[in-house]
Image (cartoon, rainbow, N blue to C red; front, side, top):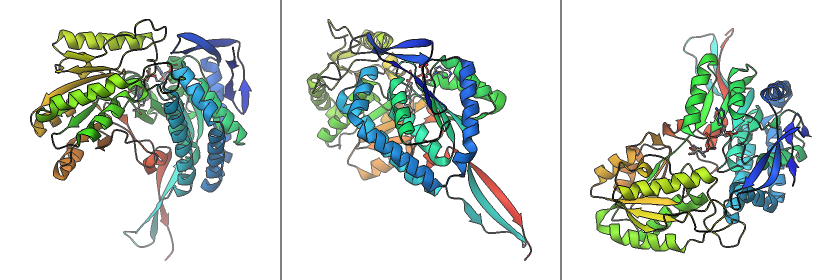
Length: 476
Ligand code: NAP
């Protein structure tokens, strides 16, 4: 079994301590990863600090060239990296290939954005002064990423931070660390100087504390649960550490009677079942206008039943395993809770009988009571609760009745309604007649308790830049 090293200050470093990495399709360990303690993170932050001045002095174009070379490396190892995503995360191989493709696109987008860290010249109010706004890289960044998109969500942080001129210490999720090591191999092969990018694995809470309290770490960018986000917010109070937070979601899907039914069914299916429902932007609640409710259910259930469940490495699989045993337990609990509150179970609803891995059947529930757990909490499973509504205002009120506001979807052919919805839905990303809205060039992030700040787009670069006003006195 391969033991993967960490990537510290330009070297691949083994460790006396290791941890097993589990394949969710078999529940067996397939690799080991080195782990280190908090003191080693402090050294990594110091190395990143030392690497910062020469990296920031490079032109944006030169940093962009490094990012293009990293992208070339990732692209040339596409199949191997995708296979690794499937092994450590469980998602179907086709979706892992999509994750690699999106990662390459993020790297190339920020390679190009590196040249566009524009400032401004602001007209003076009094004679003898000139005002400039300039952008400077923040410094050493601590990046913490989750397991559900182990490669692309790390790239969403690393690419803009490096483009901006920051150096990065990445802490991937402990259960999916190998993609981060493969990314480090690509960074290394691209010739990025030592200390500019590092990968470290170890105790998450202690690492969080170190990033929060160590003055060399100038920013933390985190993707994960709202619960851990709150821990970081509390910890950041002492040092007033800047945080970017990409947290949980509870996306509503609104399907109106005027929608193209085929588009709505396909869109809701993609929004719900992609990544086996373990996506922060996954559809958690499907609200359908009553005149088309039963027709929608019939078509949606037929599609859900046709999804092939299996090991993500098998051809043609649509639904892989859940990530771990806790995910299966939560999924089954959510189904049982909804049924106990009067929901109709239209398909699925169980752990796949006889499976060794963490497989749950694609599930559709109808007439789900609003107080059901699946209508309030992230289910993170292939479980679709569907309910009927009568009026647009009622649907909107239900859609916004959540502490979360990461994404929302609506299916309608009424242009007036589409504008009303995009203006009033409380979500950072809104898909109108589109179940797969994320793309490199558009900002991504949450409102309410789904987070602070934005990744991707031009905003993604700005998240790693300080804005400075320079007032220049001059002789006129
Ligand atoms: P998680 O438990 O919050 O873990 C996320 C990362 O934080 C992991 O690397 C984890 O490390 C680390 N971590 C845990 N406790 C920490 C602490 N006290 N201090 C510092 N780091 C800590 O979330 P998850 O279960 O991996 O991911 C699922 C959640 O992420 C869902 O809520 C989902 O909606 C959200 N998510 C949001 C987005 C978005 O863009 N908004 C995208 C994807 C996922 P260990 O693995 O070592 O514990």
